[in-house]
Each structure stands twice: as C-alpha cells, then as structure tokens.
Length: 247
Image 1 (tube, rainbow, N blue to C red):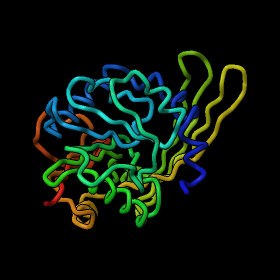
Image 2: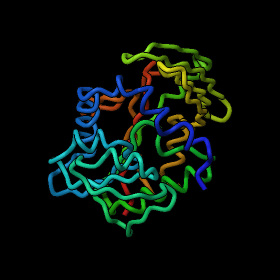
Image 3: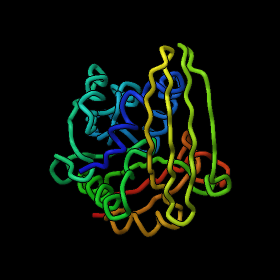
Image 4: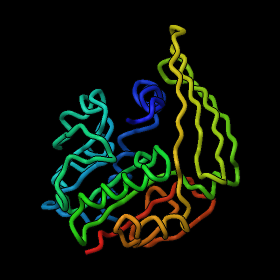
C-alpha cells in the first residue's frame, strides 16, 4: 500500500497551494526540456509517470503519443482533455507490458516516495516499461543544495486569499526531505499534510541506475536544460537524471 501521507499531502492541499506557481509558461518550459532530453518524435509512445493534473501532457500534446499514469482518480479527472490516454495505477506495479514505451519521464519528485527498496522497485518498473534503447528522465530536488541549507521555513499569501505555511528538514544521512505544509483557506478551513521524499545524489544515481537495468547518460542540476549539455551546480534547485534502457 502507498503510505497514508500521500493521500493527505497530494490532493487538494498540494494543488491548491501551488496552482498559481504552475503557470502555462512554466509547464511549457519544462515540457520543452522533456522533449529535448528524450529526443521525442511524433511517433514515439511516451509515459508520464505520476502525471497529476496533466499539465505536462497538455504542453506536450502533438509531440508524441502520450499516456499519463497516476494513482489518484481525482487527479486523472483533472487531466482529461490533455490529449493523452489516462491510466490509473501504482508506480511500483505498472499495468503495462515490457517495452511498451519508447520513453518515460517523472517530474517533480513523483517517483521516489518510499524507502530505498520500494524506490528501486519503482525505477525498475519504469525501466521495464521502456523498450531497450529507450530513454527515462527523472527530475527531483537537488540534494546538494538541500544539504547546504537543510532546514527551511516559508509562508506566502495566495492570490485568491488564504495562505500557505511550510517547514522542511533535509536529512543528509538518509537523503530524505520531510516537508510539512498547511493551507489555510479564506474561510478559515485548513488542510495539512507531511511529505517524505527521497532525493538521490549523483553518486547514488551512478549506483542506482545499473541496478534498474539503465545506463546513466547524464545528470544536470537544472529543471530546464536548454540542450543536451549536462553540468552539476550544487546551488541549483533541481537535479535531472537521464538514462537509457540497457538492451
């Protein structure tokens, strides 16, 4: 079973607290990075792992044959009309045959929500669903930056009223970021949840990828690489891993 924290954290709490930040221009920029790094062609069959409300599917519409997977029926309902086939399922047990896709991607820390064994299982499932020679792209926060500032607190007002409060603590030893978020609506009602997300360092990725049957092509410390040049910046907010399915 998926841990209970995902039900409280992902849902209305998450979407309502970041909806104003996930702008169409941001989605378009991220989709361009995805398309460039995966070298997408219109004939490619591409899987969006944990597609959420489908914002990347919408931005990639027409650039490939898209399939979005998420465990949340409510998220998939929001993703309707995104120009993709939608499937409900668990990242650790994908309901697809071996090699069903030419490429797959996971954006915003969606793939590694469990302990290391389950995270490896999710990565292996993603690799299994991609054909030999196909590509897998995984994005999450940059642990090097979090290690420099392991504790953070933020609060901001929402455009429609209400506010979001968040505290986070990154454990350098385990690579787990624990983030507690609270959303207070204009009418005073509140949503709250805590996320536990695992972020892998470049060294850990070098060991993790082969265990999943993948060859690591590159790591980049940015969420919007403009080309296929990879560089690591400890101060960048994001880490992107690009891998190829081993034949």
